[in-house]
Amino acid sequence: MIVGDIFEFMVSVYDQGIPNRERIVLYANETVNTGQYGLMVGIRATGNTAFPIPDNLFWFGDAIINKGDWIFIYTGPGEAKLTEIPNSTNKMYSVHWGRSKTVLNHQDLVPILFRVDAVQIPNVQPKALPNKQS
Image (tube, rainbow, N blue to C red):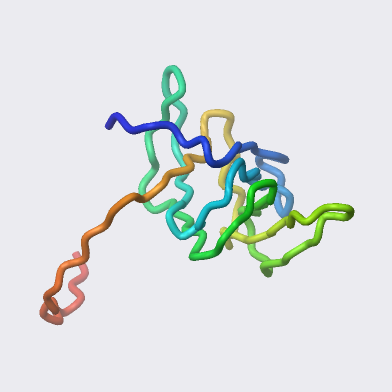
């Protein structure tokens, strides 16, 4: 899939593979609603590409982040926290993915920041089907 680049954030990874410290750090280059963004984990490919790994999705939820704010996404469990940056109007938001193990524990595993520009949800109620084990 060919998509455009995201310039609204700068993305970094710190303490990769270290439990309780591994984090993905975003710096906001402009004011955005984080509800349009999420993270996936992917396997690094050639160039500046990666292949997403199934079942590895983090959605930020709706919030307005101002230009100059930081978001720290710790991959382990924890509680969300807001920190005022001294001598600044900007803030640092710490959130947690809630994973039981580190996520980026290999050099070829990378975070993929994505932006959702549109969605479609069916306007029908699906039938309740029994849960079958195969």
